[in-house]
Image (cartoon, rainbow, N blue to C red):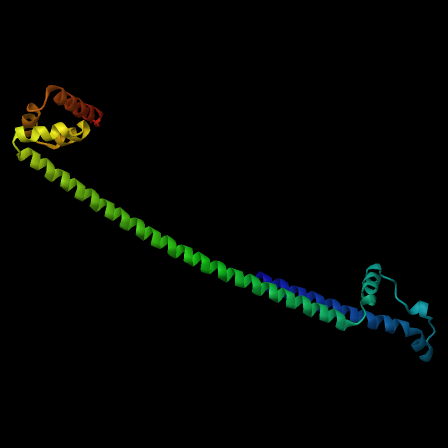
Length: 203
């Protein structure tokens, strides 16, 4: 809207300048022919007496208007400038439309990315739940085994891993299996379990 107002203001200002120049040229011609008219009318005042008091600002305006020459040249220049401004405005409008399309595509991609992230989070949550269920079932299997059969399996496990199973077991089942383990291994597992409990938050 500001661009249209500026263009209209320029057109109005240029048109007013042209009209003023035409009027000023007419005034100059009328002033030049004033002595002849005065003589024909039998006037008593000379041309120097007829000429009104000079106004510096008016003379400056007149002097600036006289060299204009053919008005068609000025009108052609104004028309060319208007065409250039219209072309520039069309280019800016085209760029704005392109930016809007790009912004819309980016927004669509962001929405798709958020949906993919949510789906991935849901998948990971399901995987975690499945893994938790598997560990819980395996812990229950070890609890139901005879301590003598379960102990050799725990001897082959990593201490951190076996300590995790013992922490999930019922105390009586864990105690029976640990009693079948070598003393050094049972002690190491106990140390790991105690360290985990020591780092647990307390109220």
